[in-house]
Length: 110
Length: 114
Image (cartoon, each protein chain N blue to C red):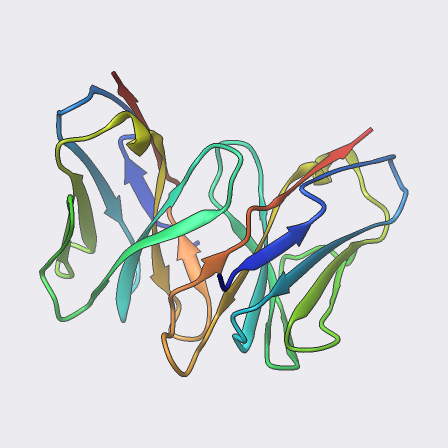
């Protein structure tokens, strides 16, 4: 299976702390994306990093990509209770499809 | 606002009773996807349409079918729902020529099978 794996599976932190989640994948990619899913809702696209990029920022999000290790990390700085959600990495299959990772459930406590 | 809409948000059906879930979009995207997501799992792609071209995943059960009568609408038909089909069903769209790979998701339909 192409499915990526994320760790940790669950992460619990306090507001104001940073949250880091990691994604590993198996095949070569054109890009890697991160999505957020609030409980019982659809996924929301957060950020896309191309295979020739090593780091990308968007607001409080920082994504890194290491294609030699087939891994990526998502850092959320100064977390808020509203960041509580599941976070999925997704890689493309070279066509029109995405393969999602197993997800990290983030809980940010006030 | 341009968006992806799914109806109903919650659907309850009986074992073996056909059910249809609907998805509409105002984004004018040419690709539409249906995913199944079970509790605490990643979304699993069932099939997708690139314009009118239908692409079925190899492991999608025959019990699941789809229709896309026009650019805006896409339907998921479950012919004989089993207890194992209880899940969240997510519709997503993308504009392959403009912003490939990025997908826009609807809020999902939670299917319960009794």
